[in-house]
Every structure is written in structure tokens, then in C-alpha cells.
Amino acid sequence: MTERFFIVGAPKCGTTSMAYWLSEHPEIAMSRIKEPHYFNTDMGNRRITDRTEYESLFPVTPRTRVLAEASTWYLYSDAAVPNILAAYPDARFLAMTRDPVQMAISLFYHNRYKLHEPLEDISEAWAAQERRAAGIGLPVDCEEPAYLQYRAACSLRDLVDRLSARVKPEKLLILDMESLRQGPGEAYRAVLDFIGVADDGRTDFSARNEASQQRSRLLGQAFRHGAALKRKLGLRFSTGITSLNRERLTRKEVPEALIADMTRDLVGQRVVCNNETVRYSTSGGLR
Figure 1: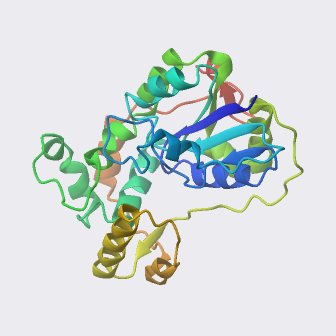
Figure 2 (figure 1 turned 90 degrees about the horizontal axis):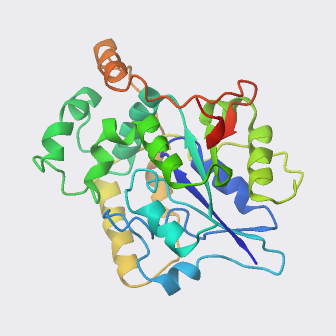
Figure 3 (figure 1 turned 90 degrees about the vertical axis):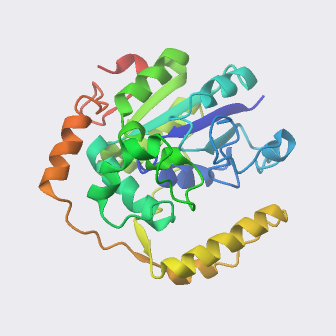
């Protein structure tokens, strides 16, 4: 019998790298779509809504022991984890965290790249959260308004506490992004041990999904509409043409006043683990 394993978030916390490394393990069938968001029925970013189609995403082989997927907004969603547990009561969960202020900054630039965020000034985006939460000034291109709620999305302590209340301690692993950077191999093997598969001897821990930006926002919008049309037609192939409009992100300095505001709003939201050597733990080891 195969195990079910979910990387539930958070966004911009190293989930793409971890999901990619796990996808190459011979005993793990990682979803062909990294973020199907099938179970967050309370949000508007579900890429897969049909159960049969969802189950078909996993490239099962005779060696498969674990079916895994990584939908980073499951942690934020109020419905996702209860839905997962209703379907798979013994599922295991990995939540990945980082400094919430740095996460908020990274999420802003990610939203800019994904065309969810039209505001160029991060200070303006931070100030717009209450208006947007009330439905005022929401951009047309943002498929899910929660993407722009930086404070709520980066309140990691609250989100992890809610997750810990729903999932048995032995079924939940918390991994800090800093530990991933400092010792990716050790963190990777900790995940393998947690889900019960043997070390495959992986030595390449190159980062994936590094911060990017659109060369042309207008061209990016055209590509996005084309991708939406492909999904409606049921087409799953990729031409790779969108990469021509992508370049490495050159970040601007974040104003000190905004850093102070973010720090004040997100105080106490950092998830810290007891094991300071590798800084990962099961939920029972968190303080």
C-alpha cells in the first residue's frame, strides 16, 4: 500500500526545490503538476477539480511507495488539510517555513512575476492589503485574492499552529528554509526518513525556482492568457516559449520603514525548531 505525502507550503520557502529532489527518487511518485491545489476547495486557484484527473497525475511504477504532491497554499487554506485527511487519514505532511518578513518580500516579487500583483512599489502593496481584503481595488489578473494578503499568508506561526492542531505530531514535519540552505542534503534525508523511504544517495541539491521577473509584462499577460486557453482545451504540453520572457530578478532595496512595519505586524510569526543544528523537527518538537 502506498503512502500519501503532502508538501503543504508555505510559498517561497523552498518547496519547489524539495519537490523536485523528491520527484527524482525512484520510490516517490510526485505529481506531474507541482501545485494542483485540488484539495483547497475554498480558494480560486485549483488547477485540478476532478478526482479521477487528480489521481492520474502520479506516475506510479512497481517501485512506488509514496504518492506525493506540493501545493503551497494548502497551508493557508482552511479547507485543504481537512479535505486531505477525509480522503487519506494516514497522510503525512511537510510544512516549510522561513523568516516571515523575508517571505513577504519574496512573495511580493513572486506575485509580480506571476502577474498577480500590478503594483510596482512593495510599500503600496503592503498598504493596500485591507482595501483588497474588502474587495476594493483587486486586480483583474489575480486569480486568487489571498495571494495579495501578504500579512495573513506570512503569519506562519498561526498557520502552523492550526496545522499542528489538525495533524498528529508523528505525521507532521516542519522544515525551516534556512536549514535547507545550510544543509540541503541533511534536510532532504530527514524528509526521506520521515516518509519511510531509503536514501537514494542524491548529491545534487541545486536550487530550483529562483526569483525571476518578466522582461515584458504585456508579453507575460499574452502568454498567460494562452496558457489558460490550453488548460480549458485540456492540453498539457509545454512549448517553453514563456522562458524567453523571463530573467533573473534584480531586487530593489526595501525601505527601512516598510521593514519596520512588516516586522511589527509579523512579530512572533517565525517558526523556530528546538534542534538548532539542522533546525527541523516534528510538530511535537516545536517551541
